[in-house]
Each structure stands twice: as structure tokens, then as C-alpha cells.
Length: 374
Image (cartoon, rainbow, N blue to C red; front, side, top):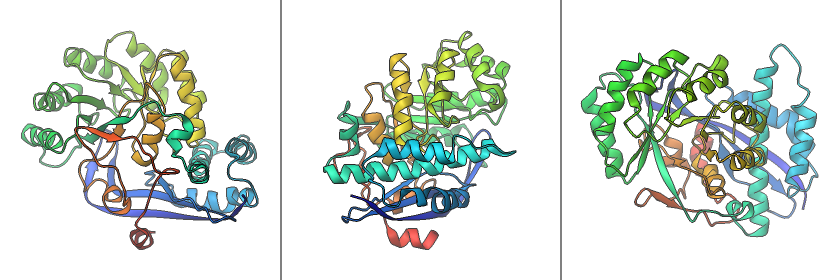
């Protein structure tokens, strides 16, 4: 089997309202679609990466930089291709913008890696989860909420949490970090008072707090039974800050979304900075690199999470005994891609989705929508 052709699409769907986290606003849903064609008729159909800023750069990197190295290669030799692309186009990047270029190239590499795993699974007539080694038959689902919206107070937060429970969710990642800790604590308390005992609440600061603010906030939530606190400290020295924070609190600390490879995960573990690794496979070179990070975490008893992208995360988290929640946006306004483009998305029942069983990544897409918003 050989690779014949690569097609890539940058899709951006405008949202009908703005969703604000601790350090950002979301006004569109973005994704990269990657199709790799083989000479025996197997074609990948994958999407990933809610990158609202660099979509065109990633598209260009795939088409002009990575794709020429793929033509004629056997798509089943995933490790060999990954190492070739990394060596030729990522490893030795050196320029004034090398950090931007490295992270952009790792995202482009991830898109290729997802497509290769999809092809391999289709060739073997197995799900990617089965290829990786299934460890879980069903996966707990969390939604993402708590966004800062105009006019949103305790009453609206309470209604939001009740809605998630009525929809069948058993967990929520709640956004904070835009306000002072005391004000954010009031919002978290309103959410906590509105959920049942079997509903997990995670809190995501999106690097919005200083170390002192994070310590202050952890003192306030110490007895609230929060599942974990994610990216609690400012990005510019987050590993150092989180390492210090962990010595001051019993609250579990999660991070990893901002890392671009398993080496960054290793540094966090060596500094005893995390209890949960929330590595995004799109940010970090794909399934191949995510599994390298998972191996390190497994050896140190660190739980694995995944930032968004349920189409990929369900395979990865299902292959880890310590895999946690698959993230799905319950609010259809936040993720029209999930609602309208992913045609065979899994159904949520009693807070869980079944482990995937279709061959490859098992994704079927609405190509009319893709062409409309490419």
C-alpha cells in the first residue's frame, strides 16, 4: 500500500455568541480535515484541532512541507513516517519565531498522524482503540461550561449545571480565571450547590492566576471535593508555579494542554507539578506522541486526560487504564462541528459513551458543511 495524494481543509464555523474563558474568547469553531488517499482505495477521514488562529498556517505546512515527503510511502509504517517528518521539518527549526513554528509544525504533524492511524485501522479492520490496546469498554463524559457570558449570575450558573445533568452528563469542566479568586469562588460555589454527589466538577483556570492567587483559591475550595484544578498558574513559568502550588494544597493539579511533546510532560512530572496530564494530541504531534507521554504518566501513576476532540480522545483514553473524561460540549452553540459535521458521533447514556468499535477512527463527516465553511 502506498500514499497517492493528500487533501486538507481548514474549516471555520462562526458561533452565534461569544464564549469567554479566563484568558480568551471563542467566537468560531475551527478544525483541520485531513484526507490521505492510498493506491488500494483506503482513504482517511479525520478532523482535529480547534485552532482559531493558525489554521491557514497549518494547512500550508501540511500541503507544502509535509505532504511531499509522504507520496509513495507505506501509510502503515507510522513510527517511521513520524520520525522522518519530525527529523526533516521540526527537530532543527531555528529562527526568531522558532517556538511558533515548532508548535505549528507539531500540529501539522498531528493531522498527518491521525490520518495514518485511521488508514491503518481501516486496513486491519480494527478500531484505533483496538490497535492501541483497549483498556476500557465505556468512557465517562464531561462537558465544558461555566463560560463568562454577559448577564450570567448565580441563577444562570445553577440552571446551566442542572441542564447538564438533565442531558445525562456526569461531569463538567468549569471555567474561571478572569476574576479575582474570591469572585471566581462564588461562581464555583453556585455550580457546586447545583450538582448531585455523583457529578464531578473540574475547574479550569486557563493559566489565569498568579501563584499567590492560585494558593488563595485552593484554600477556598479545599473542602469542596473538586475533581481537579487545571492550568492554575500563569503560563510564563507554569511548571515552577504548579510545583510550588502542589506543596501547598491537596487539590489535584492538571496541566499539559500547553505542551507540544512528551518531553514537556516529562518535565512536569520531574518537577512534581501535576497529578493529571491533560495533553492535547493535536497540539503534540498526534496519537503516536500522545502515547509516549501516556507511558511516562502510567509509570508515575499520573492520570491521563485529553483536551477536547472526542473523535480522537475516545480512542486514546480508552487505551489507558488511568484515562479519565472524554470532553464533549453540551451546548450545541459552542460546538456546531460536533452537532452538524460529525455525523456518527457517539451517544451519551448515563454519563458514558461506549468505546469505539468501527474500523480506524470511525468518523463520518458532513462534506456539504465542510465545503461551505472551508
